[in-house]
Amino acid sequence: MALYVINRLLAVMVVLLVISMLVFGVTQIMPGDVASTIAGQFASPEVVDAIREKLGLNDPFYVQYWRWISSVVTGDFGQSLIMERPVSALISEAFMASASLAIVSFISVTLFGILLGVWAAVRRDKLADNLVSTFTYVGISIPEFFWGIVLIMFFANYLQILPSGGVASISASPGVWLSHIILPVITLTLTLIAHVSRLTRSSMLEALDSQYVRNARAKGLPERTVIFRHALPNALMPTITVLALDVGWLIGGIVVVEVVFSYPGIGRLLMFAIERHDLPLIQASILVIALIYCLANLVADLLYAVVNPKIRYGNGE
Image (cartoon, rainbow, N blue to C red; front, side, top):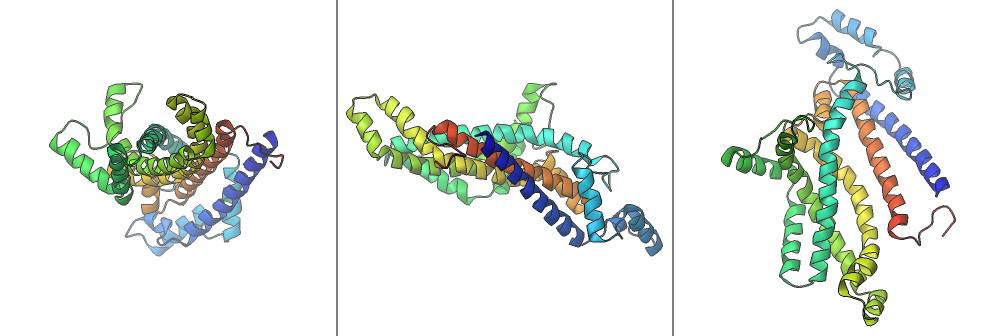
């Protein structure tokens, strides 16, 4: 297992290196010019050229990449060209806000997605199963921004019981923090809960129809034991894979949701940087998002061994 973890961590480093090259290359060919943005609309070409020279934007591509990546590996992401603050500080502030939103959302997706899937599978072809199936079709079909707009109109504008945007500190006031995070979490999780519950239902039905479950029932074991001790652990294998992939979907959804709800997280920060062509901020934000996605997939692989002890990594079994 230790060897497997080391190999996967090395693979993550290689993936991040490739992503860094792609991100740096794409940001160099993006439309717009950060020097013109900094100088202003009415700046002369001489002023723009002076800013480009000062920022090193006239250097060859490989020189700029090496200068950037050699700083990144030491934890220095440089300065924001627009806000003139260290990028690491901006990323840290935004990441903490997004982390609370993402953690609450992921826990909700895991808990409610699995519970709904198991509930539908156990009550196959009954009312509960039909209700869950209808929910999954509706949830998967409608994008996050639509749910966000509907929730804002109903709960914030019509009922006026929840704020339409912003964020609050959980340490200062847990109640106010919760009121600000409810609508973004619901918006983020509706589609993913539908996705996870649908897959869990399919896997659970396959497990319930398997021979080992029939043998467990033939032994006279209680139905609760059959479901949660024999069927569910095996049914969770594909669900864990999908949950790891849904981390990427969750991150993409956070960008949309943070813009809709004016939530000051890493997704909104990335959109701010793209709109203003702030290259160091764009590059650092995407690298952090890629790192989170890679680590989520590593955790999913390790959870396989927890859910199914028969799996052993690194020994060919």
